[in-house]
Length: 241
Image (tube, rainbow, N blue to C red; front, side, top):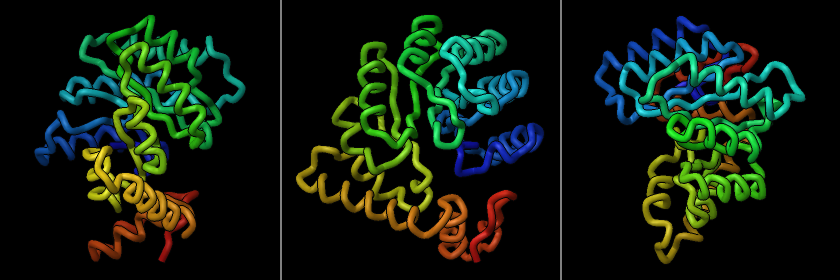
């Protein structure tokens, strides 16, 4: 909840907080939720993270602060350290969110290693949306040494990630192709796994080739469920009719 596909960083603090309250009020089990809480502001990230953890959500997905570019390892580590220490809750489990194509900030192996060494309980894993298998593979190797969970940001890499010790994927297109993704994630050694992987990649490519991914996915959901509200996006994104 509140990942990239939900336009989380186009929402205000009170919107995100209120929406989480509304979801929990409707009985969604907290143990099934990973809540995106990363913002450029440390105080806002702390507020959202505290809310999620205190509500009983097992983990939070946290972006690096992303407005300032050319960040150093020291600066990125300092941001996450500040968040962890201000939240100050032993239940906190952070999944670092690496998506440099949008943030302009890369969470490197050094960042992962330093944070995992400093906060071995709070740092639970990493979502890598770099889109570069060499980067993902290096992060998987680092994570294995520290027993961290790694998720890829696209099901294009699902089978390779699972074979290398990854946990699975957190993918925008899981909104429209969940059954097939779950099937392969649960059965990576089935005889037709390679064919299933090619099918996942083809479906992902079809959505990516149809236009901006988030509006395309929401337009598809509008058609599937017959609810035009799914087409609503917030500027600068544009709705697809």
